[in-house]
Structures are given as C-alpha cells and as structure tokens.
Image 1: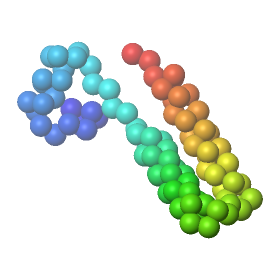
Image 2: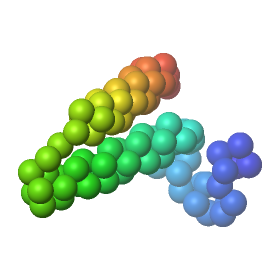
Image 3: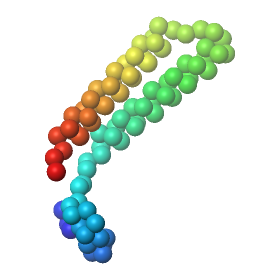
Image 4: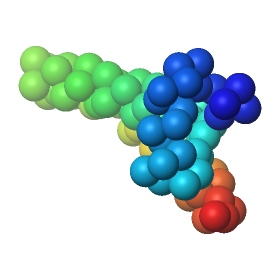
Length: 88
C-alpha cells in the first residue's frame, strides 16, 4: 500500500480487487511536455498577434518556433520510449 502511494486502505483493497495490480507512473515527463507545449503555444500566439497588427514576422520568431517544436518532439520521444518499456 505504501509503495503504491495509497493512504486509504479501502481504496487500496478496491484497486486490488478490481485490477489485481496497481500501476504507479512517474508523470514528470508528461508535465514537462505540457509546459513546453504551453510555451510554444504562447510564442505562436504572440507572433500571430504581431503579424496581424503590423504584418511583420522576423527570422528569429521562426527560429524560436522551430526550437520549441524540436524540444516538444524530443520530449514526446522520451515519453514514448518510457511507455514502451512498461511491462505488466
């Protein structure tokens, strides 16, 4: 019960009866990807506002978008590899 991170005895028993096992995942990679996605979305929105306001976009803006999406891709690969290694 302690290893599974469940403090409520009834909840633990219910999980064991219904599922037979408890899977505890480290979701820190998913949280990091969510943060990166939020940053990329915010940057894209700021660029879209500027383009709509004065019609200009800078090469540095495009580079920032590319860098953000590269980070997102790397994080997604890391998560997928971690999930592929989970065994019953």
